[in-house]
Length: 128
Image 1: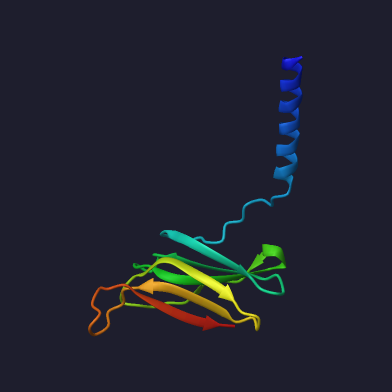
Image 2: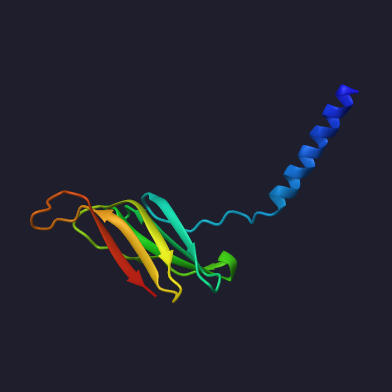
């Protein structure tokens, strides 16, 4: 009886795994760059639009980029560079959306500023 029970359990788990896999879409590549794209963050607005930020070192140093996905992520806007600094826009950018639909993004950057040479500080940007 034990081998039969194990076989039924294994078949049940396989069927469950197939059903769970059926709920996922095919992976869609959001960036195509000559260098690394890392540390994405995502937020969803009240209209079900997807908003993604990440860091990319294609321009020769790390900068923050943004992209918006509509219709459930089937269509995406062109990547928009949000930072242009002399330093590195680093770590993991974070994104949030308020009740008015405004986007709020934070990240750390070591852009040169008098008195802060090379130190990482937190930066903020608001968008619509």
